[in-house]
Length: 506
Image (tube, rainbow, N blue to C red):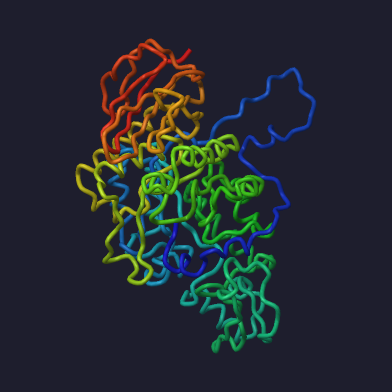
């Protein structure tokens, strides 16, 4: 999730924090995939897709900034699920400073912001979501603590009194010499890492971003991070988008190994700015999700074909990233265009729209979620401002995806040729693909017109395995689509129109 301080300070800087990972880690089935043992008579356990490959529909809450109560969200779960939402994301669940980083800067890791309720309210929300087959994840800072936190103030007082071993003092990196080398793993640009003097302590502490950083080369620092993470994992949380992120081996234990091993539920683990350019490294490190394009509030793979940045071939290349992730047991993700304001923070704010939002944002959902990219709303505050027409149509896409296995991230995907005559130049604004469910029992045909005028779009079923004599079901609109009677099939689509059809295959 992009937010103002990260976007301003980290543009182009993440790569500086990355190192080559030394440890191979992947999804639960990785041990089978990498085993070199000779086969035995016992059949191998089939690789299973993860929970997050079998659902779609994210809804992100800036809960601390806007003061959403966890009890109110719990009451809304049935409504959200009926609208196609399956994953709730929180920025962030612990007690954070509303006025720093939009609420993610941690004041107290072991409670929630008072305006959100109590830790018991949070636990009840997570448990209720699980009972309904929904997931709960979080944007989470595990690299520093806000300097205004009572925990750090206590550490300052203890240090001044001569204590060097208390839990609080041991959580941070101290020095009396500001010329000492800074910690090695800095999680961001050099400008955000420095020695800061504490008048209370009478010493310097390592400051990362907005408070004392956790130095992952110091076991006592790492111990507190593990304690924090176990506290939240015990609430049942299903995953984390880690603030900033690095592939440094010293961070792997808290970023990947502990979340996966401490509790048994499938975890969604990603970095704030992870992109497919490093998908192999992410997979080896154990991260199992990343942006399908990049961390941008206003640009995604749909907006790029709409504005002409890419054509249909470029779109296919982009969508192939989610195919690669799926084979790794991972997912890629994207959010409907949105935006936080780097100058005025979040409220009041005018969120970005498409020229014809009521149809284009719906087509955005049909393309991105329909292709198997995990997708949803980047901010609940924006979603509730959409028109009733937009919300109804957008939600119907997510409902369609979640009720058809051929549309879930676990389903395979191949491009389908578009064009009535192969000698003609391909139309850069039309596209089609086939999705096939993981069990092979359902096939879907998805066809798109990305132009601002109506078009007749002809698809060619050669080499697709799709039967050429059948009457497809219209999964989005309901009812039957026109019959297929030949290898070529023409569909009439309005401007920014699409079809999602259930078809039979040989």
